[in-house]
Length: 212
Image 1 (cartoon, rainbow, N blue to C red):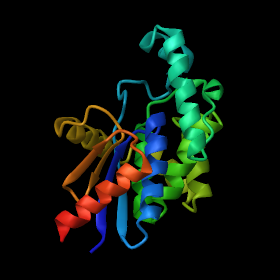
Image 2 (image 1 turned 180 degrees about the vertical axis):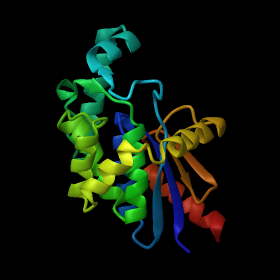
Image 3 (image 1 turned 135 degrees about the vertical axis):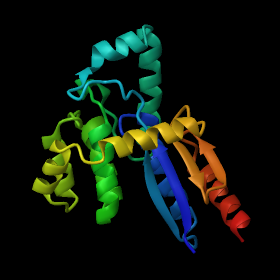
């Protein structure tokens, strides 16, 4: 029976991008373990308007110490490079509401292209600086992953699964998730944060052991 891995995260969380990459590196270290990874939605700020807000102003209000924010960004850029990821914070103009992006990942899971859509969303936001709150951008990413563009635009415009994503976010909060990424292996072993691939591989071993 495959090992179920739940990855609770938000697509605008840079540590989640690192955590996602490191999780897949960990799985590559355990080629004998058959696993099914499911992305679970969490929104760092569900109160943001649908059209998003100016990122620089938003980050300045959230982190008034500019030098501290720059130090965090520099460390993220360094760690991301080790994972083969380019973080281009200066290119990001907008902090989006991620409900739409989370809904797209939900539909992508049903279509069997979850990982491609997650990668597409994170690269679009963190590397290319695209607005992943914009339905047209979401449709571009969906189409690149093999999904039907017009179907995705229709689902987004009709608000399909908006409440379902909000409910899953609330479930995570009620379950004690206060920071992401939050990864649950086999329903029994939890890892908080973007741990190293080696530490995540040890969590996989523990979950396999408990399931035996």
